[in-house]
Image 1 (cartoon, helix red, strand yellow):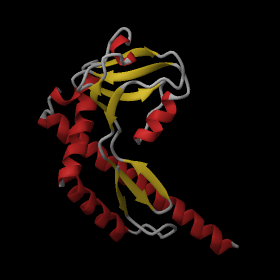
Image 2 (tube, one colour):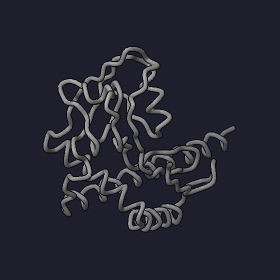
Image 3 (spheres, one colour):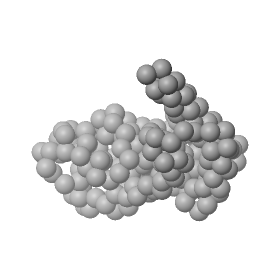
Length: 193
């Protein structure tokens, strides 16, 4: 499930006051329980990337219809709607919550998966929902996964958490500015016509 925040109605102009309100609301959202959890997951992904802890492993199944015989969960991410556009504020991960005895995840090479591991992508494709993850999985019997081992045990260092928080706010500001420029160009074009 995604936690969505709509900053403006579709097609509405982004103004300076809208921008300030949006940034305040995003800061409050990041301080909520869901926001903190999403930010912690993002900080873990950043820490794993910076310390070369993201691994690539290959899962081979007998067919594209073969079940993983495992349970996965995709925790909520934060998604932002700005005017007509949208952006994911945080990345999605599929958490391995259970693995059956005959799961092909146990045979993944070179890194078999275990409960507590997180999957970041399937064959280089990032996902936002479990349904999308399943769709990418169904495209090939042999899939390459980017994973982080023991994801929930990764430390969330305060400095990395603060840097992630600032990076997310910077991305939001950048998207707001792009939307405002697009709205301004559209208005100018309409006035010329």
